[in-house]
Image (cartoon, rainbow, N blue to C red; front, top):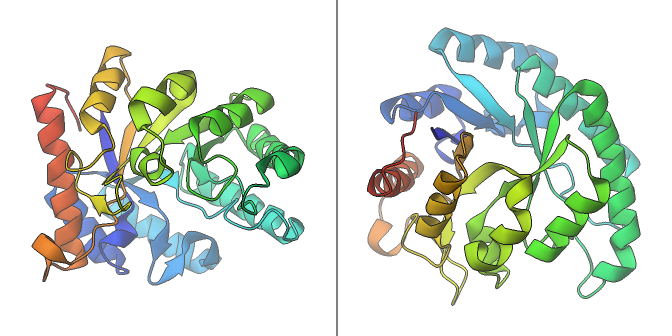
Length: 274
């Protein structure tokens, strides 16, 4: 059983509108990244309490804290970022979320080997926080960070070797890094994959498209997940633009386009979702 969730701030900055759209698509979880124009880590304690109350009243749960932790240059001072990570841990506990999405630091072009030890040192510090709190950090593969390819993602996960660091597999991001998501990256990361970010992209220009319309090998991914009996979250992160055939659509409508595309593929593969 796949559990659908999503980055609801792609729908609207307004939490009520976010929840209305998710509810209309029978989605009862969200990846909490942005509310009222603020990143989750910028919320005051009072605002966090208000968000939690609204979610509870509407019957929604938080699948993951969509933090920007690790989305900084490896050459920048890590200490302030480390303090932000502590806040992300506290928020995950507050919202009863098992997961926090993180990244592995922007690396100067061609300098991955040079900065590898610093990346691993910083990641280990973050993982130690997560271990003490009983939270799982989800490393998202993304362009320009250390963990951009399947090989480097595995290097991180294998080197740190903690049950509190797992992979959030994003097929579109691999496409944008000129990596074939399923035929190249998936076999390297299969044992670490605990969460899926679902979006698709075209290899010729990196543009993001609805699931199944790009080169993200989404159908093959669903087959692979079904084969291994994956029963986890699949988080919609549409990144669709209101242009071309989607010209004139607002953000909420674009989110619904993305949602219905993955639902159709799940139906084709006879995979149940909730």
